[in-house]
Length: 411
Image 1 (spheres, rainbow, N blue to C red):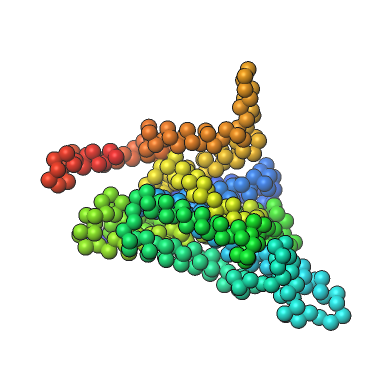
Image 2: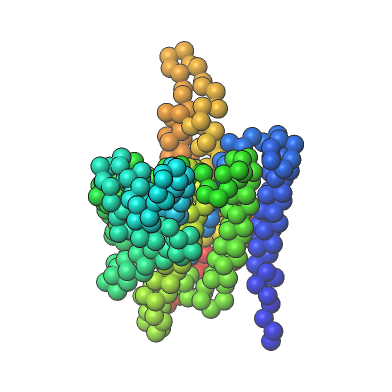
């Protein structure tokens, strides 16, 4: 029997891609660079960054929603992707400035003198004049683009291999991923890490070779790139969770011991999904930070990965489109509340300033969703679309007569 194509088996793919294309086209037509100018450039940057966060949420949902691993280290991969592309952005821009300055000298500078000048400009702020070893390929855009996925991918591969082969699961694995993130952040905070310590990398919004292109146009270009990356990642994630591979992944989430007993290489499946999600998250970071303009070790704080988990939970864990919905809704609300746009509520005895109370509101929303709507916002979308979970009627799972599939389906 001929198997149906992926898109026919998963209609949400067409819906998500159509909504994403329509959103991108609408924003472009309302932008200052290509349209009526209704949407300011600052808002387009916010929307572009939101799409990057949605991509990171899709990767998080692969790991948590489908594999069952609550990874609290995803934002470490996100920041590493930003650092890798940030190295080239900062080096190339500084090199152009130094070269223009030295061009006025009677004798043209040698490559070594040019590199020394670049190192002085970049690392003088941390008291160094040497180019660190980790910047050996910063002059090459193709190599740095490869490192965007290779560095986080290798880190995830090594960490996952050590953790999964040791059969670390549950909350202990979550703590390990958080410890990895904290250790990486503490190392990056040091001036001798090679990444300018607490100063981080700045000026990333200035793209080398595109100095004549205004920020209004660049912001739209990054919006297009972010939308394209999100669409491709959604297709890839939907393909991964489909078919036999996806069934095994979900089975590992539901009962890892039974899957191992059936002879499947559980560690291999977990390592493949974990590494893929890390590389997807790194690509999101590489697109995010040129729009943000700066990256520093504070971006790796464990709380950032917790926020990512909250977005997925609110959107609907175990549904890729739910992860997108959660990231977009919560991210835009966060920008509105913390950006001072939300009006303060004046009470007789207290003034509610949403900049201070936003995190409390987010925490309460997370608790309410966990208790009363475990399927998140995506559950409402499913209900409106008539998509309901399968109803199983009491077929025993094993010798335990209380272990009913119907109860498991409602979990």
